[in-house]
Length: 306
Image 1 (cartoon, rainbow, N blue to C red):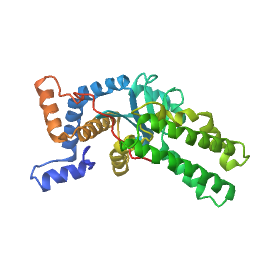
Image 2: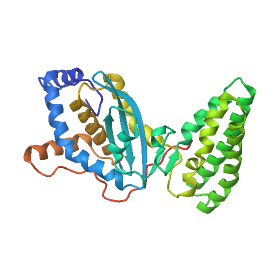
Image 3: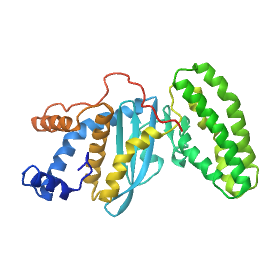
Image 4: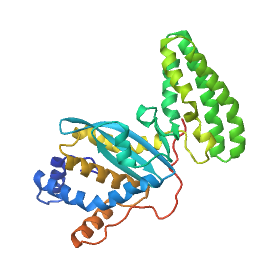
């Protein structure tokens, strides 16, 4: 139900029709409760580790808990991911998931609830889509600014790809980026002062918080996009579309825990099935549950360049 995103009814049908194991939808709920309890300690251990990270990729998506609107959050660290479901999209939900994130560099979109964090890397993949929307405008003034911004964006990521491929050194990359940044910010200022409603809001926000666009050019090892979080969130979003959310707080807990284990096992190339068996076995034996903490300082997942 969690890893393969099947409904309780279809999970029961699979067991009965293909494996010849009699099963009812009520029994799947019982098993879900057992598995959720077995994964609780593993989940909390990973969640406590989030506040110790230097960088996190974070994202959120709307969902439902019974008849109430809720938000599914994910925070992705090196080699593990943690999910949480909360009833709002405010920063207190982010704090509830991550803990103290003041000293963590967050890769994120430009949503307002991240603004109190002083160390952000705004996603250039999101920005690229916004720039493309400007280019697609029938208004010539809007289109021209979009073309000029996209030209600088492409140049920036040409240098980024050369650096990531080992063709240029870090200091060379930084030197090449400086004129690109100067030109890009001048274009933002042009849009902010244009008096054009289509441009002023977006350009004002970007120019006011322009440092958050360039963190990856100042701090080595930071990625310029939030694609890592989006990829981790996608299976849970598909689950939500198929199931229309969860029906209770306990159902949300199960989804948080099974999504965390599923995605983390994928990142660590571990068997989800074997891990859950080990967790349930330890739960019944009242033994220490298995851990998903990485055993070494693995590099951050590499995001796709914008």
